[in-house]
Length: 392
Image (cartoon, rainbow, N blue to C red; front, side, top):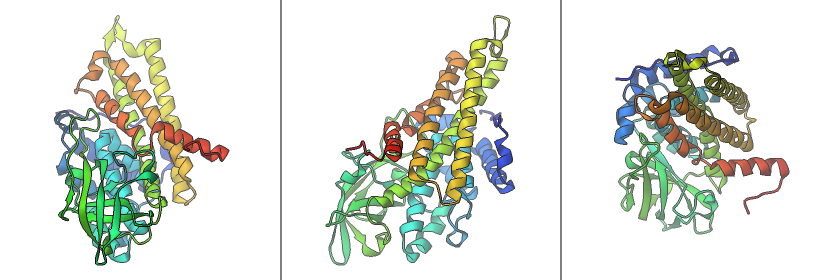
């Protein structure tokens, strides 16, 4: 069973910028990952299976809806704490962080922000503990980067809504108890619906043969004349702003999470370089290896400062969607470059399950695409600074 020897890189003493509560939340999550995730994650990745037994622990460390107020069963933490939790979970594995991100930002967040009081009381406390698990249905077979073109629709049948359509690439779908589904009404307005497992005509076939995010359960959402009670409509969600606001929360968490994967790869490469002897000395003593390691640490440090500032802005209610896009794009690309360099430091050993490098690399190939692709986030920044939209 793998032993987790991770040491946290903090070259610019960013820890000094964190409160005692921030460090307490982070350290608790780090110890949980070392104890519960690291020893088993390679086995589950090889099996392409989500370790469902971790759900209870994720709830216990506050990883489901960290920012949800205590009155609805959440810990009531700030967004910096949320980011630190995502960082630690992704250091363990992107799939585990994805499970938490979806539950927090894409299921609990929309119920909290757009739901009725009855919906909040009914769902949020059970989602916070993991007693209920959820998923988020936006992406469709024909509509990824252009969610506004969605074809999933519902019509008013008097006593209920009749929902038809399909969603794909849905994390948590195979085991989710509820789905936050975005669909167009008869007027063409995008609305949010809470669809529960067991509703007739609702199915969640699993997506198999993935090379990436193998510890995350991915599936489709199929709606064939599903009768959705009218009380399951999110009353405050209207238009594309609803799902995009949720995605901002998820993208914010990813910007932090990617640093965790990068730190794990860097720490692994540094330790290996000090221990691996070639030509009579540790390979850490050779210039090209030092270049790799120094550049890794530089990029991690820049990313740490970027998300720390973004966290402050989000806690103050001042972080913009474009700022979040910039951080998500930068930090995921940074992490992917670092794991590729770390793999080279380890040589052939970098492709084995004895080390986490290749697993992180494969995972980040998904992370750089989901919640807005690398190129789309670049265009979001371009639009923000020029005022000219390049999407159309």
